[in-house]
Length: 161
Ligand SMILES: [Fe+2]
Image 1: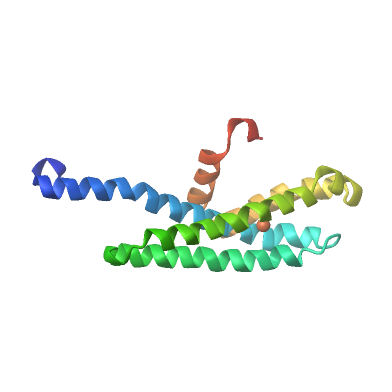
Image 2 (image 1 turned 180 degrees about the vertical axis):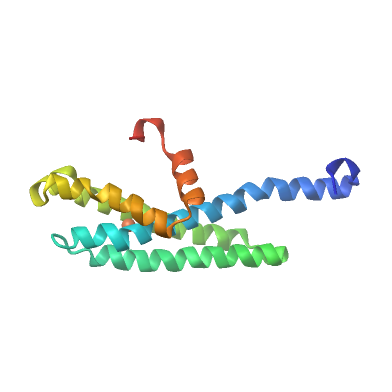
C-alpha cells in the first residue's frame, strides 16, 4: 500500500519499519563482507604467508569470528520473524563481542604483515601477484555487489589506492 493511502497507524508502523531497514541491511552487508574477507584470507592470503609465519591463531580467530557472525545473523532472523523476541542488550552484547574480537585481529594481521616483513621475506613480484590473485578469487567466490559496494562506501578517501 502506498504511504498516501495509509491510516495514521499504518503510516507510523511503516515509517518505523523503514527506519529499521538500513540497520538490517547494514548488518547483513557487514557480516557478509567480513565473512567474504575471511574467505579471501583463508584461501589466498594465509597460504601465501604461512610459508614464513605461524598463522594458526589467525585461522582460529576466523573460525570464532564466523561463529559470532552466524550468531548475529541468526538473532537478526529471529527478531525479524518475531519482533517480540527482540532483546536490545543481548543484541548489543553479541555485536560488541564481534567488534572486540575483530579489531584486535585486524591489528595483529596488519602489525605482523608489514611492508618491511614482506620485503625481508618475499620477492616483490610474488607479493605484487597477491592483488590479482585476490581479484580472481573474488570473481569466482564473492558477491561483487555486496562486497565491492561495502568497501567503496566505507573506505575513507585517504585510504583509497
Ligand atoms: Fe583476518
